[in-house]
Image (cartoon, rainbow, N blue to C red; front, side, top):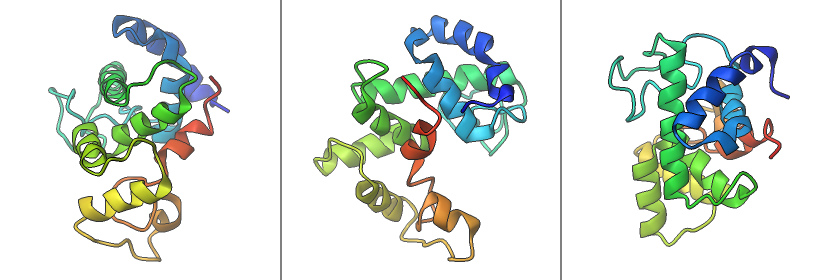
Length: 169
């Protein structure tokens, strides 16, 4: 399920994952890369807008160094996985929370979950968060993201499912 472009980054991902104690999650990281970029471009992890990018513009595809994108993305995922209390590569329930946090922004998403007593990922809670985060701005039904990423103009409300279709723990 992982294409050859993403597979070509496996050794790079393994090296960086080891640095951040994420070696058990190389396949998850590659699945995330597959969803984000299919291994194309320079910001393969789409981590430009994340907190760990301190060198490039915080705009989509702002990162122009593949290795830096991988490093930022892995740190971002690790942070989200820590917030989600992921116990290992087979902890799919908490991995779903972590992945949604990666997509929405971990701090704001996990604050929302805690405030609302939500402890597991669901499409409903994801949409409810996106509704608030978008300022109640709906995507147009003509927007190609309407069906694939959800009705609210914020992130991908189905992100965990989109990443996990590429992941086999």
